[in-house]
Length: 161
Image (tube, rainbow, N blue to C red; front, top):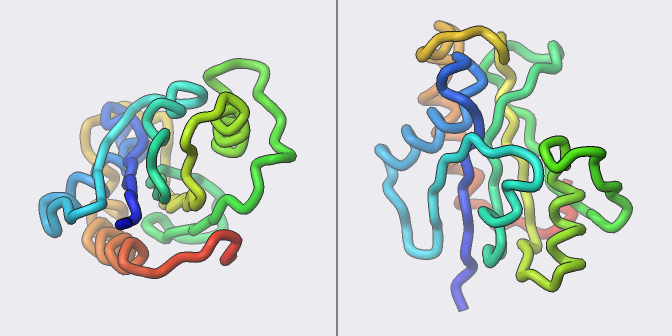
């Protein structure tokens, strides 16, 4: 049976760089389209609200913004969720992280992904109003999309990183 993959772009396109996840999946879909077994969605949801989005997929790739200051804007940090059994639930449904969502979904008996990858794009700002990416991210967008394409086509094993 073919693996069902979800590529989920997260963010808010009214907050400039915070919308990078959505801009990346839109550009990806425009360039490559949806392939058999791969669904591309965008969402401005967070926390527990994401649970409904990821149920029923074997592999989920979340594309979102991050600020670490360790890399230049447009760089990608890749994380693979290895184990959600030790995750603690957030104090609010809006602050619940991906490991906690996975744990809760499994506890409820939902068909949860066996692989969750976070494709976190380094951004300049998360809280600046505006409907366009900052110039640095706009320039980096094509390279980010290509990197995502390579990632999607990679054969990933759980706990690989």
